[in-house]
Every structure is written in structure tokens, then in C-alpha cells.
Image 1 (cartoon, helix red, strand yellow):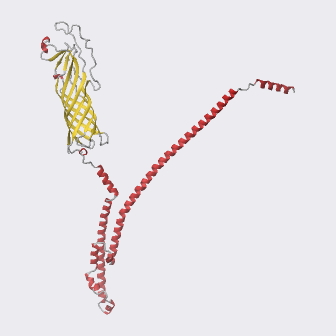
Image 2: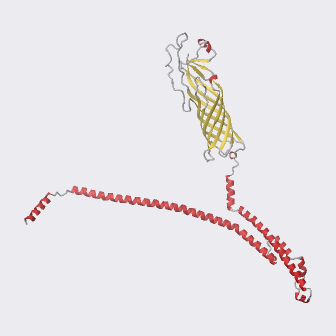
Image 3: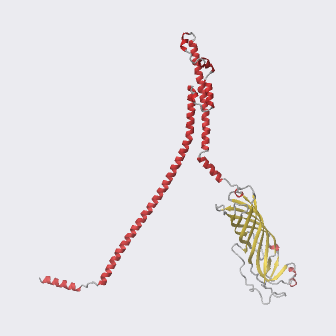
Length: 462
């Protein structure tokens, strides 16, 4: 009993030590439980949606495949049905004609050609059926009673002659009927060929061939004539060691310039730097002739005038009396130290371009051509200046320049009014001279370049 009381007391003390949770604790617990339930619902919905999407996508893929297969099968059935109809249409005339030949042969061999008269040939058979030799024995006396001849002693001989004549006539008629049947068969073969020629498939092939044949437009007749036109290009001229270099780097003109200027006495010599050369305007104009070598490829040759220009800063003219005697023949000496004047260096060339034009799209209303070719140029004249660092002067000497230039060009042309007599093409144009302007001097190892817009106008013949 004491032990039981002790346990009861201990249990009572433990119950007193338990702290009942407050309402806020129960509220938090309830929130957590609800949150977990919501999370479970969300996860379940998410999984169900994924399963639904996968099932739907799988069903759509299968349905699309089935639709494609059904379409192919239906198309195959249609084609097979069309082929069978076509074959049956070809077979019916042949069967009918074959029956016609068989009927004709049978009727001729049996002696009943009067009931079937398809054409004049059957009439010939009908006329030939009755042998003149047989007419005396048969047709002249159709109602003759052969029983009366039994008492005649010549009856077996006459009967054998009659049988022989009848057999020969039947053989001849049979041979003629076979020949006529063969003639019918030849006519049937010819008719079947004509029917095949007039069938829908053959007509479709002819229509396709006519549609793909070249039109009467002059632009669609390759290799028949040359078309003439004019070309004009405008843009900027570039100067550099390569096509990416646009100009000389800027130089400090005062770096080598002493305070006393140019020394004309026996003092020390001074060296000067040239002013930087800047890019300027350029244009080209000329005529061309073009020929189509295929439906999308053309070749053109022309002759053009080409103008390049560059600018730099120069000083005032120097009196030639102040210069040494060896410079007397030089023209237009200028002081490089004074940068008060802008000088334009002009280059005039005569050019022969050869180009290949390839159409890169399929649009006939606005065709786009890629142009590429080679240019041969000859220097006509130039007022470009050369530079001498000591005593720091500019001078003109065209003998330094390379007169003949070989370059490459490329570009795109968008053509308007292509199917008309006067199409107009325009687009970007790039030129690069593979030959250097000169081997020494101010333009030594430098190359011409040009970037601009080119316009071409063709004049087609009627």
C-alpha cells in the first residue's frame, strides 16, 4: 500500500510539473500542420499536372504521327486509285477493240459478216467471201435438190470438187480475217498511245514543262545577247597598308622643328615630319556590257573613270631661288613647317572592271546579286605631293607612282524593275588595290581602298 501511495505521489508531482501549452503555441502548431497539408496538396497537384502534361504531350505526338500516317495512306490510296482508273481507261479500249477483232474474225470465218459492219474492211471481206467458182454451184441454184443427182454417175466427183472449193474459200476468208484483225490490233495500239498521250498524267507533265520553260522576258534568255548599261559609284577613298587602316597616324610636326626654322647656310641640317594624310571623297563612273551565262549567273565587262583624293596640311610656297640648284626642276615646293593650307591630292585612273554576278535569292521581283571581280587600272594624271624630310619640303614627282594597278572588288546589288526593260540596281561596293601606290616616297607600300554605294542601270533590247 505504501508503495502504491508513493507512486501516486510521484505521479501527482510529475503532473504538477507539466506546463500546459498556451494558445499561441497551439496556434503555431495548427499553422504548421495546415502548412504541411497545403504543401502536400501543392506537391500532389504539381505531380498530377506533370503527369497530365506528359500524357497530353504523348497523346499529341501519337496523334500527329497517326495523322501523318493516315494522310500518307490516304494519299497513297488516291494515287493507287488514280493509277487503277487510268489503267482501266487504257484497258477498256484495248478490250473493246480486241472483242471487235474477235467478232470480226469469227463472223468472217463463219460466213456471217452481213450482221456486223464496223468499217469498209468488213465490207471487203463480205464481198470476197463468195468465191466466183462457188457461185455457179451454190448461188445460181440455191434451191437445187441434190438428192436428184444421186442417180448421176458423176455425183462423187462433183461433190468432191464442191467440198474442195468450199474448203479453199473458207481458208482464204480465214486468212483475210486474220489480216484484218492484225490491222485492227495495230489501230488499237495507235489509239491506246493517243489515249495515253491525252491522259491526265501526261498533260500534267506537259503543263509542268511549259511552266518551267523560260519566259519571253529578255532577262530569262541566257547566253543570247549582251545588255548595255551605265554605272556610278560614290564614297570615300581609303589609304593604308591594308584595307582596315584608314589613314596615317597623327604626327607631332613640331617634334623635329627647331626654333630657328630651315637653315640655308652651312649650319647643321634639320629633319621634319610630314603632316598626316586624311581620307577624302572618291567616285567612279562608266559604261558596262552584261551577258547571262545561266539563269542566275551573269558576267559583265566595262570601262570606267575612277577618281581618288586625299588631303594634308602644307605650308606656303618656297621661292626656288633659296633652294639648292638640284631642286630647281622640282615643281611647287612647300614648307612642311607651316600648316596653314589644306592641299588636295588627286588621282585620276582609267579602269577596266570584269565582274561575275550571282543571284543569291529566289525572288524575281527584287533579286539580290553578289558581285565580285577584278579591276585593271592605269594612272592618267595626279597632282599628289611627295615629301623630303631635309630640308622639309613637299614636291611633285609622278614618276614614283606605279602607273598600273590591279585590284579586287565585291559588293551586293538589289535590283528594281528586274523584269522591265530598264532595271536599276544599287548596293554597297568595296574595292581594294592589290598593287601598292608606289614603292617609295610618301605613298610607299600604301594601297588604295574604296567604300561606297554603286548604282547600275541596264538598257535591255526589245
